[in-house]
Structures are given as C-alpha cells and as structure tokens.
Image (cartoon, rainbow, N blue to C red; front, side, top):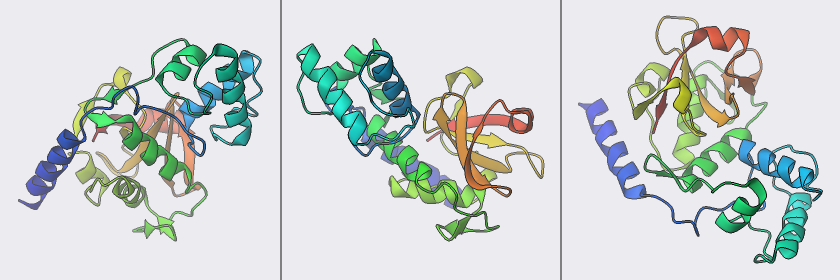
Length: 222
C-alpha cells in the first residue's frame, strides 16, 4: 500500500509539472552538465572562446555567448534561450521530456555533479557519504521528487526507457553484487552517468565501459 501511494503521488507531481514553453527552456550562467559542454565546444568551433568544454557555464562562457548574440543580432543577455540555442547548435532546444520539465532535469544534473568526490558509505544518505540509491534519492529530493530508498524499489517507479531512448536525468540500473537492480545512477547524456561507487565515491563513468556495459539492465524516467 505504501509503495502504491508513493507511485500515485509521484505520478500526480509529474503530471502537474507539465511542459515548458520555449521561453522557459534556457541555460544560464552557473548551470552545469554535458549539454553545457556541447554548447561550449560548438562556440569554440565557431570562433567564440568559451574556455574549456568542461560543462561549467562560467564567466568565459557567458562572455562568449554575449559576443555571439551581439554578432547575430540576438538579445544580448548571455542567456541561452531557444533562439540563441538554435543559432549556436543548429537545432531546437529540448522543451519537454515525457512530461517532466527541462529545468527540473537541469536541477537534478547540476545537483548530482556538485557531489563528485563525496565518499561511498554503505547505507549513506547524506553529503557525508552516499550509497548508490541514497545518492539518487537525495538528489531527486532536491527537485521535489520522493524516490524509494533502495535501487530495486526505485526500479519500479516511473516509466521504462528503451536502450536507444535514454535522456539526461533518467535513472539507469545495473546488476552488480546481486541479481536484479542492485546499482542505480543518473544518466548525464553522451553515454555517461553519475553514481555512488564503492571504489571512487560519487563519480562519472561511461555506460559502455567494460564493467558497467556488461551489467546494465535498464532505465526508468520519473
């Protein structure tokens, strides 16, 4: 009954989130993640020095965006909205992802990346130390989403995602120390995910690496 109640509440929350308009879908200084790294790389390729393509939207990237906007006759505010994004990347900005908003996903990814290096602690649920499901639960709670405590219980929440349909912010699951969903992480895009690992603490890894690729069992979108 408790699990059913959690799923119902989560479904109602996501339904109320709705979708973003083009005006609301934007990247701002301070944002982080693989999407920012792609934008930085493209700005550099276009001759606008955005600094290292490290996924950190800092002052150098903001100045590059402003120069690009000025040269293209766009609103000169250093915000990468729909029009600026399209001009830089040559495609439309993602406005919605299956009912949950781009801004929500960005909050999840930014929060997750901010804890890189935090040590692994079995049963850990705080920035003093996390285990894998403690980490995902803590991060999603920052965005207002209550996940179950364990990886196998989290695997029952949300909607199934096909191997080819992964999107940033999806939960990805692996069978490690026992059968079934025994490890969980957050997909970052570009074939990468972040999770609490016993060897490196909170760290980024590739989905197709020898270890993780052999143990991947599926993904869920909440």
